[in-house]
Length: 157
Image 1 (cartoon, rainbow, N blue to C red):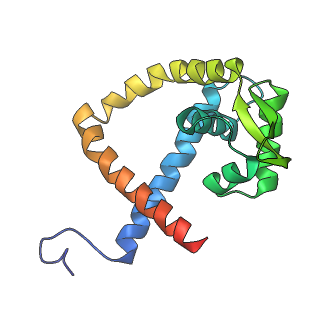
Image 2: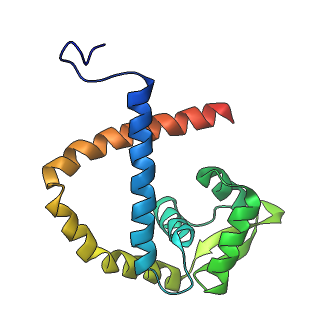
Image 3: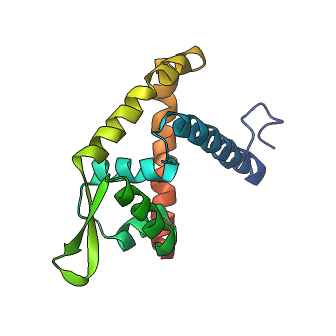
């Protein structure tokens, strides 16, 4: 109704449109990322490297599965691929001998940095459709949405 009165559209369909657009952007950005990754790596591998860089080493596979909202078996498979490429190292968990902790290797840090560098041209091209001011406006709004979704997920666990 607000739209008919000159205000912005509202309602479930409007918010679903937002989530749908974000989902499509995620798929397209994943394709772009995977085109820049070294052979044999896929987006989930990169997201783990990025996550560990951001939050720090020493996370357990279960903690990481929860953070990524994937089954532990899926995370274990992703970590095995990273370990095969020598990008992470699994170490015994001193707090619980039955579990392991994940540590980035120097090569893992280097692959993350090289991938970001490989994306530099694509990211620069983005300025053709989004100005720095646009990004400055959009990013806080998306961050606010992510924080809300994180809290909602955590309250449902």
